Image (cartoon, rainbow, N blue to C red; front, side):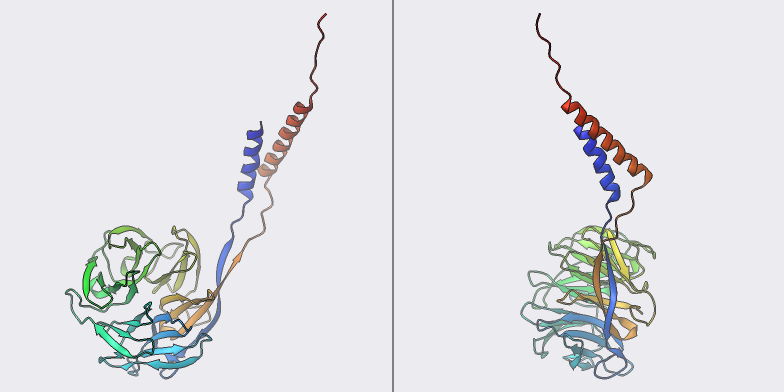
Length: 350
């Protein structure tokens, strides 16, 4: 009897539980279209250094002004480093930026087909890579990530592979090839490494995200072409927040989708346009120390800032069938109570 009552109450509770909903709303933006200090043409790489400064990769062919622009934590322009060109410390397409544990800044330059390394004072130190398809060569690489052991992983987009280098830029290995099957790529765009060492790669023209283990062995994939929840139209940037949630920007879909660590869809934000909260070719995505989400709004020449909020909707009014379960449970509880207090009848022997 008691188990039956608990079952009925449990059924009622399960139908009444309302999940919390996380939403992301526009807060602010910095940078605007143009050439000059604090102005951006196409927003490529994004990164935040230890002191809170935000590094923004600016690709600007029309004005020969490609550089890394530096904004403070309040989004005020401070300075820049690098200039347009193909020499040491010069850029053409700075599409990816990561910060090493020692403070070094690594920049992927797609059109110069190399990775450049700067110290924490933005002074050029070294570079590796050149144009080609051989080991250690690049063809319009989009992004890079750092493994816990210091290895450098580069999304070699035009060669449809991920190359792995040691911390000194010496080639070690690679995985992936052109194609549509498991572990193959069609324009890999971005890389992020999970806490467990898994490697997440946005496979842009295959409209999916593929997951590999720390050795580059294929594990799984998520997404397919489309505009629905969990579908992608050109997944580009990818990142994982402190809660393990996965954020994916869509280069052609002009939105950001959010998933939990098991790839359950949570939310999305953005649409095509130039207004607040709208995108035109969103590229990379990072997180500020306060939890804000920063999205590089590629062709709009700006970085947009979003905040999150979690809302628990009011519980739904019980339906007729749910009220029936409640009444039945109460009747059974009452019957059980009467039974428990029923006096015991005894007889005396004659």
